[in-house]
Every structure is written in C-alpha cells, then in structure tokens.
Length: 402
Ligand code: GLA
Image 1 (tube, rainbow, N blue to C red):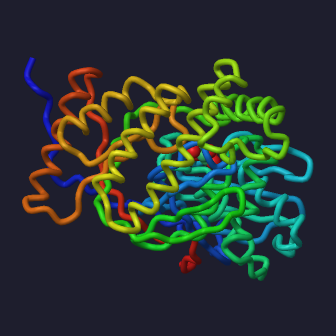
Image 2 (cartoon, protein in one colour; image 1 turned 60 degrees about the horizontal axis):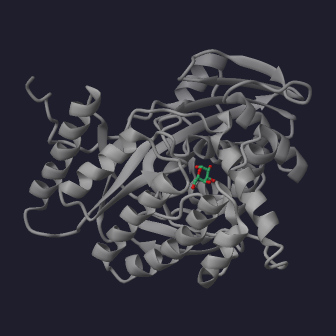
Image 3 (tube, rainbow, N blue to C red; image 1 turned 30 degrees about the horizontal axis):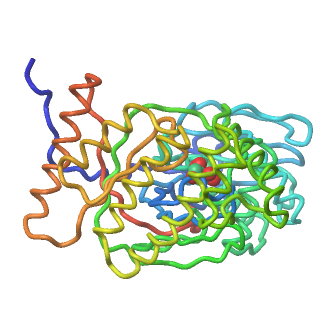
C-alpha cells in the first residue's frame, strides 16, 4: 500500500465565517439590531485544573462564532443557525430547548437576572460559526460569550468582558448543567491577539503573556459531547478527593491547593482512582505555573517538554486521552516538535503542537512534522487528521450589522 497524499502546504486554515446578519435577514425578513463575535480557544497547558482552583494558559484562536440579534415578544426566543438551518421558537420562561438552543436560553436567563436583557423581553438570534463542535476548542463558550455580548448590546447594557464571561459561565454550568470551570468563557471574553492568558481560577487573577513559538493544531476527528458525562464524572471524583483530603488538611478548599511537597500523604489518603486524578491536578498545577514563567521568558524548549509531560499525565492519571491523540503526540515527538499534548477536555478532539520560532529552514521543519503526523496517523487509522496553524487572536467584540 502506498502512502496516502500528504498535504504539506498550506497548513493554514482560513476562517470561512458566513454572515450572521445575512442569515438573520433571510430568516426573519428584517435587519438585525446588533451583532457580536467570540473566538474558540486552544489551551496551552493547565488541563482540568480550572474547576479545581488551579491555573490555565489558553489562547483564543482565529475561528469565531458570530451572533446577530433583534427584538421579539416577551418570553420568545427564535433561533436559527447555519448548522441545522431550522428556526426554533420557544417560550424560554416555560420551556427548555434541546441542543445549542439551551446555551442561548441559559444566557437569556442570566441576562434577565442581571437586568441586562433586551427590553422587549424576547429575542431573535441568528448564529454562524467556524468553531468545530466537540473538537476540544470550546465552541459552547464562543456561542455563549458572543450571545451575551450581542443581547446586552440589544438591551443597551454595558457589560464588561469579565461580566460577559460570568453570564456565559453560569449559562453553561448552572442552566445547561456541564460542570466546567471558567477557562473557556474567560479567554473568549478577554483574549488579546498574540498573547496567552495565565488565569488563576481560584482568584480569577489574570496576566497576558506574549507567545514566542508557532502552534499547530491537529484534529483527531474524534468527537465527544462534554455534557455526555465524562467531565462531570471527573469533577465528582475531584470533589470526592477534596472531601477525603480535608481529613488531612481541614482548610483545603481546592484540590489544586494541595501542597506539592505532601504527595506521599496524598497518596496514602486516597484510594484509586481518586489518587490518580489528584496527582494529575497537583502536578498539572505546578507545570502550568512553571510553564507560564518559561513562556514569558522565551524558554520554548523547556516549555515544550512540559507539554509532553502534561499529555502523559492526562493519559496515564486523568484517563482523558484516546489512542488517536496519543498517536499524534508520539509522531510529533519523533519528528522533533518542541512539545505536543491534547488540548481541551480530551476524550477526543485535538492535539496542540509547539514549534520553535525563527530557526532557519522553519518551513522545512514544519512540513516534516506535519508529514510525520499525517503519515503515522493515516497508517493507523486510514484517514488524514486535519492540521491547521493557530493564530492567537482577540476576545469578544461587537460586529457591524449589515
Ligand atoms: C472543558 C471545560 C473547561 C476545562 C477543560 C479541561 O473544556 O469546559 O472548563 O475544564 O474542559 O481543562
């Protein structure tokens, strides 16, 4: 059998956003009154640490979700997206929509609670997006943050980016019931172009850090819906671990705050699988903080090693990897990438690959890494993974209404 075709260039995926205003007009027969967009994200390091009160280091990517809105009668939500093309009409005060509509309804409820909902009390909403769903790029946060911004503009309310993140988080966590942390909503709201965000999730203290290297994203093509339970199960395990560890350290509130020097005590106190989950969280917390320092100082090689270590911990201790993701990481390492790891919740989705910045012949090195990954993956699974370049981008913004 010969090798399948290898796409060397371009590896850059250009965002192909359809026009949300045009969709709104075509569906509802009038122009929208406001529009906003928010990005997907790629997490560099700090996985499954956010809901444990630890640090994360995400960047926003160039793919975005755009939401165009206009008024509707009290209680009415009319929603359409290019993904399904169907118009859903509900009374959001009485019904709970299925699918992506639940995220929109959650945002509406939160805005009502804040006194920042559209005056008419209802809304029409058109959504277009090039953020892939369930690919580990936080498509739900892009949707909720963009919706929160667009609806608050319609209401004439001035919500700060952090407030938008709060609305979006509560919509997903409290209304939809995905027990996520706040990483995705915060980066979608406050990201800056060319920079990663070091976010300490217990205090929400944030620092922007310029990114030196170049980042590739390799999509394994395996999809998993978060709400389906794996994330909620891990979170319950982490809470069970904290409950037991409180016998050792009554002040302990967050698993990420367990002192790294007390690992023997942690191991003694916890049975499996709580022990493995807790070891991942404590180790990943240290790696993410150290990684942020290395990135800030431009020590990309050492930073890359931490990415490989993080993947190994996700695989071995947190059990959130898949054979496809492991295959991609191993191929990236063989081809000489500085680092690689699954990004996002895991159980499918994508791998982030770190390449050096300005070394001579960099195009050649990039092509070599891409080829190695594609050939290895195709030999194992009979198909090529999607490869794209990550362009660290800005957060939520108002869009022109056309
Ligand atoms: C999902 C959640 C995030 C975070 C990651 C894992 O993306 O939405 O809050 O927990 O998983 O790091």
